[in-house]
Length: 434
Ligand code: AMP
Image (cartoon, rainbow, N blue to C red; front, side):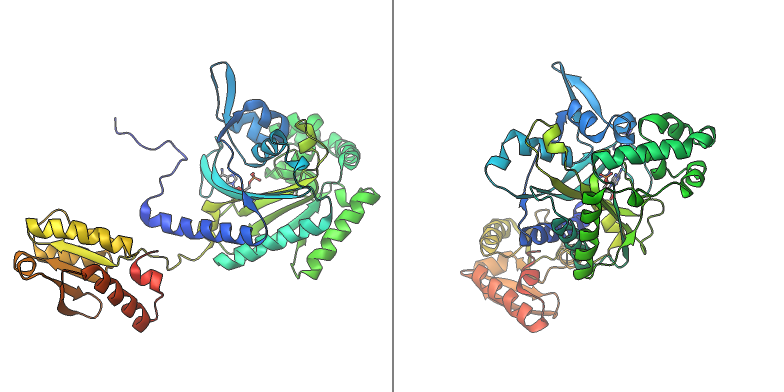
C-alpha cells in the first residue's frame, strides 16, 4: 500500500515554507517589539490539563483530542497553547519573579476535526499570553497589536468581533436566563445543543446548526446582564479601542468554543479571503481564573491564538522567493574539488552557493542555475583550472569573464554586492540569503 500523510495533516515543502517563515519571523519581531518573549512548552501534556481547563463539554475535549496512555500516564497532543503556557507559568512560579509576563508561542496543535479548507488535524498557531494585568487597557492593546500584525502581513479585510462574558457571577445569571429562554424550545434544538442544554447552554449560541440559530436569535444578551465591575471593564475596553482607532463589531453571540474565558472575548474574521465557514483567523480572550485553577495564585490573564494556515490563505501570495547567489558548475573531477572548497568559502562570506555534483553537460547545468534564480554561474573546467582561473557567467546581465581562482570567493562576493547596488535589490536578496 502506498503510504500517505495522515488525513488532515499536511506537508509543508521548502518552496511553501518561505511564506511560513515570513509570517513567523514577522510575528516574532512584532511580538518582541511589544515586550513579549517566546515560551516553548511540550507538545504532549497530561490529558487532565485540557479536560479541566478547556472544559468537559467543549467539542475539543469531547471529541477532538488525540489522547493515549503510555507508562500509565494519560497524555494528549496539545489541541491549543494556552493551557500549557498557564501550566508552565504556575509550575515555574513566574508570578513571584515578575508582576507582569508577556509570552508568545508558535507551533503545531492537534485536533481530530473533520478536515476541510482551513480546518486541519495538525495546524499551526501563533499566540500570545499576557499574565498579571487585570485591566481593559491591556485587552485593547492586545487587539491593536493583532490588527497591526494583520496589516503588516497584508491581510486585506478583517473584522474584529468583541463581547464580554462577564465574571463567574454574571455567567451564572446568564446561564440561568438562557436555560429559561431555551427550555420551551428545547426539543427543536440540534442533538448536540439538547445535550448541552443543562451543562453549558452558552454553547448553543455558538452553534452553526440552523435550528439552534433560530432559537438563539431572540436569546437575551449577556451585555445587558453584566455586573458593575464587568460593565466598567467592558466600557474601558471599548474606550481604549476607540482611542487606538480600532473599529469593532459588538457581538453578544460570540462565546467561542473553550470554557475558560472570562470578561473580554474577541475573534477576528477575514472578510475578503476565500475561507468559507472557516473565516475566523484568530480568537482570544481573558482567562482570569485559569492560573488559580491550576493551583497557582490569583493572577489574571488574557491571550489569543491565530491559525497560520488561515493567515496564508488571507495574505497575498507574496513575492518571497528563494534566490541563489552562486551556482558552481564543475566540468571535470579537478573542477569538483575546487568547487567544493570555493562554495564553502562563499558561504562563509554569507553568499548562498550550490555545487552541481552530478557532472553532466554544461547546458544542463546552466539550465539548472537559471531555474534556481542564481545570479552568477561559476564554471570550473579543466583548462580554466590549469590556468588558475574560473569563468563567471552573470545570468542576469548575460555577460561572461574570468576571475583568478585564488581569491575568487571574495571577488564573487563583491560582484554580488555590486549587482545588489545596481539593481536596487537589497544585499541579502542578491546574496541569496533569504
Ligand atoms: P481556537 O484555539 O479554537 O480559539 O482557535 C484559534 C484559531 O486557531 C482559529 O481562529 C483558527 O485560525 C485556528 N484553528 C483552530 N482550529 C483549527 C483547525 N482545526 N485547523 C486550522 N486552524 C485552526
